[in-house]
Length: 139
Length: 139
Length: 139
Length: 139
Image 1 (tube, rainbow over the protein chains, first blue to last red):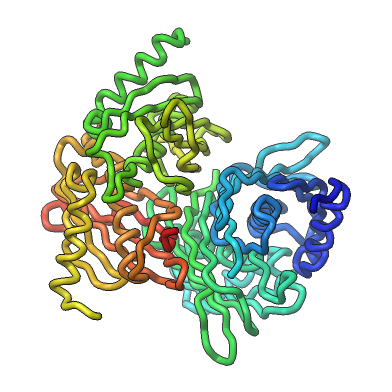
Image 2: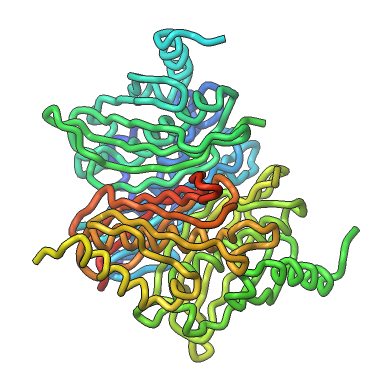
């Protein structure tokens, strides 16, 4: 059974909406197709650290979640995140964070995915972090 | 200038208290000495994902922050987190998460640190995640 | 001072030729420009493990070296590899391994780079591994 | 069926001896028990890079192999290395490299392992690299 792109995105939004932590942080799913995802987050004060930048934990949350959505929609089975690594390359400064992730190597048991996180400031996207990780079939 | 262990911990708590995101999540600094840290977090419902476990982003936040405190107190200069990797090994189920991190290789420019995250359930600690990362001197 | 693409590649080959370990493994530099590199390796029997596939250490050598060339040529200062992670996604089977790396986030002090390693078999390239790492200015 | 420590080590040495690449590099298995391994390597000139240090690829080979032995002996099923990350913390200078790895979180499907690589110089061991990775059940 295939669903329309609109329904696929709506299904993803339901999953995201069931994550209390994602709701707390205000994450929004702005694009979703098999193996491809975009998540966005308004960079409110409560998501910052002592220097006024996005807390690293917010950026890693966004990367982790984007990797999981990319892997889960590529595999189309229940999944969990096995591991990931993240490199922070610029402070998260701006109005909004945007994470885009893709599944690059998909098998029955796992998907290796990559993600880039950008800070949107004055209409310009600046690369803040790069991540790579493994999403595995659950159970 | 050296300070007493009590004052060192109090200084660390001030830094943590200045991180709005750490306050939002309810993180507490329960032990701190140069290159060694313990952070704890009550696992409230708002920190969970759709299956009722701690959201991976909460666990990675805790690891990221513990690594940074371990590296920063080992180097005793302003630092930032350059990168880390995390392996999730068990769902975060229980009342509380505990992260313990240590600096293992410290130079003037960086500290490579490791962290373990445990879930505390019924008085028993279970290993949930292992992380390793690089903390670098700022600027 | 800028040099022609041909001379740039020739300079890179001299550096590679000075690495005794790269000579032992038979690595060749097949493309090089600032922040972009391709390394190739004939998959001889001595580079294999007990199942007849490329030893993981050969694939990680190739990724490590490609990341370093990408970062070094992007920064154009003496560098060393700080860290990397690698995901193996398929056994290295075939006549030849090919690693392609790019610098994605370059500053004065570091370059974060990514690499893909392919096995070439019957004229077809298959993705074997994905890596991401940090190259830092030396000293 | 359990075997004596001596036979367990001998079995491990047979596996290592079947890896042509390990023979090429001169790796020796100096300790092995379930979930614990030590590998050693004489740091000959052919294993170096242009500055006279151990090539990073030699250190990552040793880490990769030690992680795999630790995970494989912990799980006691055929395994392969899914992924690892490595932080280089000091140039590999000396007569010999020593890698020690342990399995820290073992399940039916995977083992998360850590490794430290030391350079032995003038009788003193110096930490060169720290690694962490995932070993998975084959097939």
